Amino acid sequence: MTKCRYAYFVAMMYFLSAIQVGAEDLAIKQIAARTELHSISSLTISDEQFLKGDDNGKPATVTAQLRIAQGQGRLPLVVMAHGSGGMGANVDFWTRQLNGIGISTFALDAFTGRGLTNVSNDQALLGRLNMILDVYRMLDILAKHSRVDAQRIALMGFSRGGQAALYASLKRFHQAWNKSGIDFAAYIAFYPECMTTYQSDTEVVDRPVRIFQGTADDYNPLAPCKAYVERLRSAGRDVQLTEYPNASHGFDNPLGSLKPRIAQNAQTVRRCVIREDSPGRLVNTATGNNFSYKDACVERDPHVGSDPAATQAASQAVEGLLKTVFKLN
Image (cartoon, helix red, strand yellow):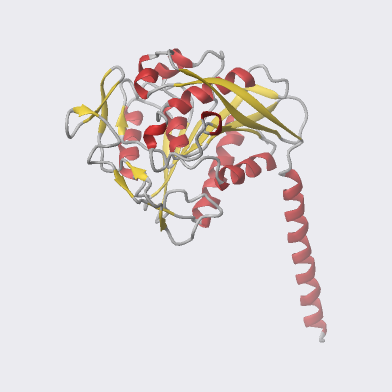
């Protein structure tokens, strides 16, 4: 072996060793210092009841996994709300990512306690807005937890949970349902459903609202979210929508197919235009009747797929946002 080749070999070995050490350090940082499971008293209510502030619902106990990141004292935290398929691989991915930078996580399981596992094929099994009530009830616990900085809590959701994360920012909903005395520091919505216009939906709390969505999403299309963002901007709100070219629904799922696949029989309201025309009444604007998942505009078999490049970019954007709002180094 020549001296040049030997020097190159040694340099590469040092380089690969450094990568391995860096990966090991990151894996260690992603291990939670403590994990707790919490029962959360909530309600199972219809969207009409939620919109009217009617708490005459069925009592429900949901659960959430609290992972306390490595660090001392009260730490910042992100509440996470899953999609229609339940707590999937993307929830675990983001939990590890956030724990790795010193941010604790509180991941909601809104289904198991209600006897559900998946509502993708029958969205009527649970009101779309019910998860907003659940995450507000999570704040009741976090407001009193000795390891949580109650002024540094953000909300992050995916698909159905992304819709919850987006619309949980409405002042109207806070006034009706959030009794914790605290608010989220930021609202982060991944590929939410924006097909519904609610009354007073541009009156949101004074916190950053961020949406991340793929241009190829045919489950929850991009265009209605862009229109909502424009309305929010016109109202002077702190909102941004980040588009990822060619990324599909669920692009941050590390176990998803790189080639988008059909989500067999999953319901999508991509062809619907829904409006709250009076408090609690959601109307299909094409018919003028109350919206139902039996309406002709409700379709099935949208696509889902993973996009590593979009995921990496979104991860950097979310980390940057949280470091800013949480005032992290």
